[in-house]
Image (cartoon, rainbow, N blue to C red):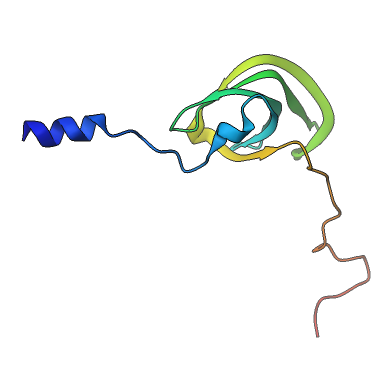
Length: 111
């Protein structure tokens, strides 16, 4: 029994995502509640807890809480809790495109 318990404790936790290629690079993180931050990844662990430096939070539109503004506020060094993270993406090569699923006014999708 002691050997089995010991081997279980010595197993290394493996992360689903390989975040090592994003260390010291700018990433954007979206949280479960809708908040988004951008910053330079300085560290991470197996639970996807992240450490961001030079980070900025995107502000929400006061009239529409689901819409983010282009305005940001500086947050500095942040520790982000892994279970609350919904999306992680690099900022390099990221651009906003028009929603291809939105229909023009007057255009109907029915038969």
